[in-house]
Each structure stands twice: as structure tokens, then as C-alpha cells.
Amino acid sequence: METEEAAAAEQLQQEQEQWRGTVEAALPSTPASAAWPHIASFCALHRYLPGIDVCELAAGEDGRPGCVRYVASLAPAAAGAGGAGREVANWAREELLEIDGGARRLAYAVVGSSMGFGRYVGSMAVVADDEDEAAAAAGRCRLVWAFECDPVPGWSLDGLLGYLDGGVKAIAARIEEAETAAAA
Image (cartoon, rainbow, N blue to C red; front, side, top):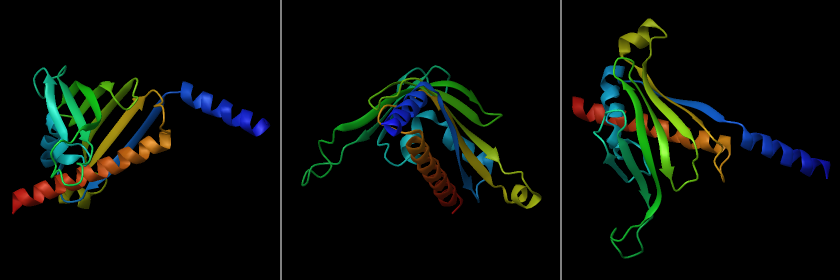
């Protein structure tokens, strides 16, 4: 009985706390100046984040604080449908809070979603990899995705961190692919 009570107390404490976290991914052959335009294009998330099928401007002017993007994942098509009739599985509306080209950083907030998010504020930054002269000379950079949010029903903090970690790595890989293709 004590174990159940301790587990319930721990879960209640976790639910009352704010979740915070940061995940990173390296772009070993892309300089920060080349990676930033991919991130700065607020309504192009579907090009870089697997699982996002729709990303479109819902309000305001793309790239200006206050604009809102609508992002959605679509459910798989029924067998034999050939992709027709796909329905929205999950969606979110996200407002651009700030964008700083000099610092290569943007911040956004989830202002509505089907996934149970309450308050969620995230940021994405492109950081030049200046740790050593060789890294700086190679023009490497890192993507840093940070967030602070209310606990999300049905998720654990570790689960959310795992999801975002996979996402930031996929975004980095797609930016690297785009830059390689552009250089060819």
C-alpha cells in the first residue's frame, strides 16, 4: 500500500511541476549560416520534421512575430485508397513569439492542439560549433530545441524528450540532405 501511495504522490508532484528540456543534433557538414534559413522559414516545418504532413500559415505574415502556423499529421490512407481521403490524426496551432536572425533563434508557443498540450513554449536555435578550431573551420553547427511546458496528459517527460530528440535529429538530417543537394 505504501508503494502505491508513494507512486501516486510522485505522479502528482510531477504533474504539478513544469517540464523543461533541451535536445540537440549535430550538422557536421553544414555551417550555421546555411542551416538558419531552413529553421527561420516558420511555415516549412513539414519539409524537415517527419510525421508532419501539413504546415501552413493560419494567421499573420510568415516569419513575423504573431503569425500562427497550423501543423498536422495525417492518418495513413485506407488500403486501396491511394492516399486519398486521409484524415487529420493530430494537429497544433503554433504562434511565432520571436525570431532573431542575428542569434539564429526563434521561439514559439502552442496555442491549441489535439494532443493535450496546455502551456508549451519552445525555441529552436542554430548554434555554430565553435568548440575547437577544426570544428569552426569545417563550418559545423548544432540545432538546439528547448522547451518548457505544463505536463502533458498521457505523456511522460522522458517520452516527450525522446520524441523531440528524434525530431531534432531528423530535422538536422534533412537540412544536411538539402544543403548537399544544393551544393551538387
